[in-house]
Length: 241
Picture 1: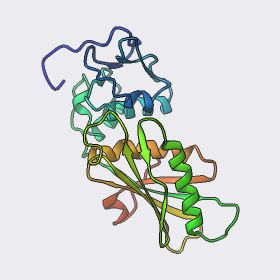
Picture 2: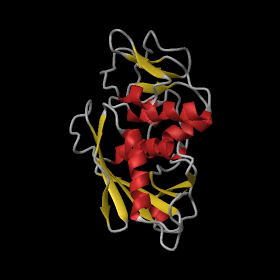
Picture 3: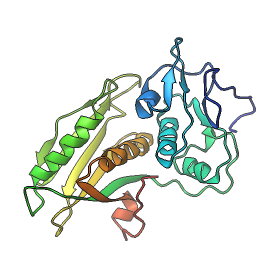
């Protein structure tokens, strides 16, 4: 724990290791938007885990919800070493009730390389980039966010994400998503996430990973840190965290 006070789960929280701290929710809506299958809110507008995650996908969503909680009230009380290490890698060790010994260095993966199978062309083009960007944008649009229309700049396609509600200083939290075809590759693309608030890069990577994997035309997704992408590119992983 990061302090000595005893933490108490909200009364409606389901029994299990993931919980929302009682009396601390400010009803920002971000956690429910991130994991609606797991998180809801009561009549007093206090969010809570209605279900505990059981599958790898659900565990990923629960961790992502902890990550996006703007006031840090979602926590993990379990002792699963794999989950604890993932939390530490996301710089969320202070949101774990169990101490984490020897956490590895924080790695922020904001570069995703992937293959896009397109029906109309044998060579990557801005048209492909616009199709990918439009798909991602459509999945990201909700009442909690604003997403600009994609812009073509040469062979690159870019658009801007900005939180619409719940977070003070939303301009600081704006993120650019840039798509570009990989040189000498007919169907391989690179997606880059950029923005001033580095803490936002992680949850955006997780969200975009989920979106990309929901498209059957997008395969072979590997995530890299900026340093590794611009270096050896030997440490690509199928998950951004």
